Structure formats: C-alpha cells, structure tokens
Length: 366
Ligand code: NAI
Ligand code: MG
Image 1: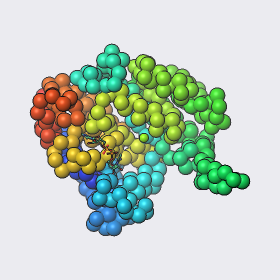
Image 2 (image 1 turned 90 degrees about the vertical axis):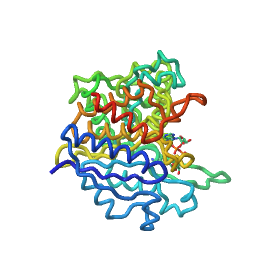
Image 3 (image 1 turned 45 degrees about the horizontal axis):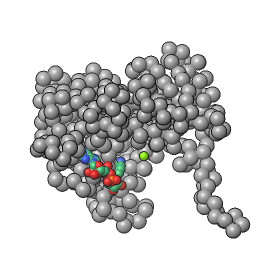
C-alpha cells in the first residue's frame, strides 16, 4: 500500500496554500512514480462549523493512523469569541499532544534570490541553511506547580521549568539523527550557568553524544550568547537543539533572518512508529492570515516546503525533497514573487496558484 497522508487545510489561507501542495503531490505521482494515499479532513474553525469541535475523535484517529499529517493553518476573527475549549487552536494543540510531538524542527534557510529581504546584510544570510530543534511538550510551559497565588499582600505568578532525562534524551537524539543527514554539527543551548534544568540538559546531551553519536561535533552555548551569535554570524550553526522556551524565542528570531513568514516550513516529530519513521505533523509557521484570505494572494511556499520536509523525514525521499526545494529556489531565482516577497513598487505579484504554476514548471525542468 502507498504511504498515507492526512491533509488538514484548516482556515483562512490554509485551504488556498494546501491546494498548491495537492498539485505538487500529484506531480510527484505523475512524474516520479511517488504515489500517496491522500485523505482530507477538517480542523480548526472549519471543523467547529461542521461538528461543533475543532477536532473530532474520528479525525484524531486518522491522524494517529497515517504516515504523516499536513496542516494548513487554523483560526480567524470569526472564532475569536468562542469558548476556550472549542477554539480553533485547540484542534492543533490536541494533535500535538495526543501524537506526543516532542521535537519541533524549524529550518531557517535563505534562498539567494531573497537575501536582500532579510533584516540582516546579504553576506550574513545568503545561502544560510540551519535547523533549530525545539523541545515542544515539556519545560516551563507545562511544568507544575503553576498558577497565580496570593502570598501576604502580593500576588505571585508561578511557572516551573522541569525536564526529565528521558525528555532531554529523546529530543537530543532527534537533533543528532538530523545532524547525521546534514553537516554533522549540533550546538546545544541552555542556561547551565543559572538553571538546574540547564545543567541536567547539558550533561545528558553530552552523555548521549559520547555514548551513541561520537561522529557528531557537539558544542554547548548559553542561550543568550546563542541569540547573539545567531544574529551575528548564523552560518556558524548547522543544527541547534534547545528547550521549549528558548526554542520559541530563538526560532522566531531565526525566522526573520530569512525574510517572509510565507516562506517558513516546520515539522513536529514524535516517537518512531512500527515502520521506524517518526509520528509527524508538518505545517507552515504562518497562521491563517485573515487579512489576505480568500483573495488568492497567499504565498504557498511555506506549505510546499513543509511537504518537502515530509518527503525527507516521513517518507525517506531525501532526493525528491532536494528536487522540490531546488524547484522552489529556481522559481524564485527566475523572479517568481507573491506579494509578500516584493516591496511596494515591485510590479504585479503572482497569485497563489501563479506561484504554484512557477514551481511546477521548475519541477518539470529538473
Ligand atoms: P499570520 O501568520 O496569519 O499573519 C501575519 C501576517 O503575515 C499577515 O499580514 C499575513 O497576511 C502575512 N502572511 C502570513 N502567511 C502568509 C503567506 N503564506 N503569504 C503571504 N502573507 C502571509 O498571523 P496572525 O495575523 O497573527 O494570526 C492570524 C490568525 O492565525 C489568528 O487567528 C491566529 O490565532 C492564527 N494562527 C494560527 C497558527 C497556526 O495555525 N499554526 C499560527 C499563528 C497564528
Ligand atoms: Mg513563537
């Protein structure tokens, strides 16, 4: 049986960008004999409208059963006043939680054609290709105790940073495995100078490297210094592995090295399934962009590059992933631009499907 993909387009521009991914998937079937069993379902506001919940049990079961989930985006002003328990975001959170997706991969890749779009100098970012691995299911966002309490005449807001060895080891392992497919370098970031969890993090990452990944070049950096280095000379990094909080900040900062939100893919990986490949959900970093939804203006590249990540990490098709990324790069080098990739007087931007056309044409030419 062919490998299976569950597509959850979601809300806003989600369905628009996902339509272009469907065309790319069909291209691989027609031209590379790479066939997938694709099923589509609802998530977020779209699921709420139909079923009164942002993710049905039935959809959850499908997500658990397939080889990879591809999600567009969820949310929008229409749903802002809904009760917290049925908000669109809850659909996405449930997927992440029940699939136990502990390793969040956020590449920061700068295509040469877009280097002038970065907030940094061309030299610093042109050709940049780094990967930030963020722990996604533990740490200070989830640790107990938490809450706001009264203490004398003060109120106290409390969160707890807490990591177990197994939580550290599993995300570090995913970073080392990734580095093996890349340049073989991992930099681990924490604040071991002031945090106990940082001390444990550093010890466990080093131990795993020494025992199982001696081929990997591992370095450690305090996360604040790491933030500085990321902006000063990002090309010194290959894979960065860090906790949930630091990863949240560092990956958003790294995102801006490369230009538009419309370019950024992501993957969230969990434990290996029976076939040895990880449970996985792929999604663009951007949201549902209500300001441009329904107008055919959205850049589909973030979602298309998310599918490239699926090819690489869920379907073991690294060469085909390279092919797709190269096609995106070539389309951009040929001048293909959606509105988010041009200045105010850059000419007439391509539509969402126009960008899809340009990428399919570039694929034909590979
Ligand atoms: P957003 O990412 O949707 O939009 C921010 C800005 O970037 C907007 O001006 C938008 O037009 C632009 N933009 C985003 N993606 C683009 C693309 N592919 N092509 C061209 N331009 C693009 O973030 P915002 O506005 O803060 O949130 C809008 C809604 O999306 C909210 O309901 C929010 O909760 C939800 N959201 C959902 C996420 C998800 O599904 N993972 C992530 C972030 C936000
Ligand atoms: Mg963030």
